[in-house]
Image 1: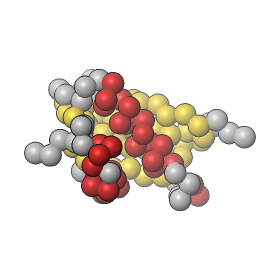
Image 2 (image 1 turned 120 degrees about the vertical axis):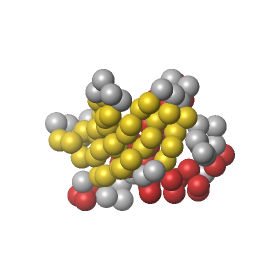
Image 3 (image 1 turned 90 degrees about the vertical axis):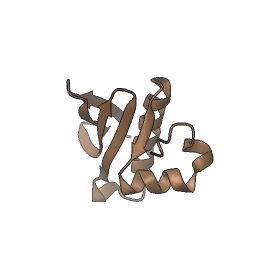
Length: 99
């Protein structure tokens, strides 16, 4: 059984990604931009071999935990993240940057 892990990698300008690994294989990525207290989610992608197995949700959960822990607001430009925020406003409303 493979071990899943999510790693956040940001550069000095705030460009980066949450990378999802299963074992040594990268199977997903959520591209972000962090500026001051605003985390913008640009794109989420999961390897097609792992589609439909909750991997994008795992990336979303890690991003939300990071944003919550650091007191950030989230601007969901990624269609997947925006759809989840709209579908569950009670869950994500406290971090959703609506402007």
